[in-house]
Length: 249
Image (cartoon, rainbow, N blue to C red; front, side, top):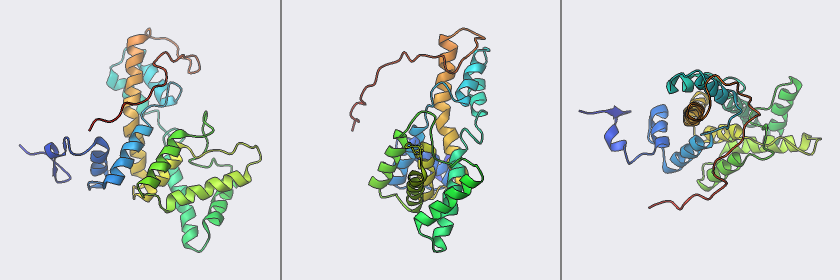
């Protein structure tokens, strides 16, 4: 009558560790510090929903139109992740690490950032962790960086991505430089708290499941079977913007 997770009794974890802290324990092997636990929670919340237009959401909704079970809809959504949708965190972590290698070899952060940006541009590759289809400033990235600073978890990876951001501004000729997106912010913060790239990628998958499940359920309950879904033809009819209630003690 005993269940252990990495050596800790599961019944003792219940009510004492948050979901994010428990996921960290599963993936990294130890209970995180309070600061890292708070960042884990923020990372998981930041990806909880991507709206109706991403491939993963469309895959889940299209599967739902067939009358498939919810589990099949969620599975099809997860299978919609790939290099260009869900893979940017890992790519950005490797990108930042390549810059930090130059820093450790004697380059300044700015010089290293300029080198790795030039390498991407010369090979016509997208700068991982930058740009967004809709936002000129990703509010999730700003919040995560703020939390990392307040929790004293900011380190060399955040410093590196800030240097890249500065280089991007200096090189921009349009007046609208690409912003750091949430993938880039998570890559930098995960790097600074010791989470390896493959694990950071797993966090994306884990955090997207609730949103995909909600979309699939909504499709099943509110729409007709076998409808053709146009990702640009939708209207939000939920609550207007509202403030969160104060946390209960």
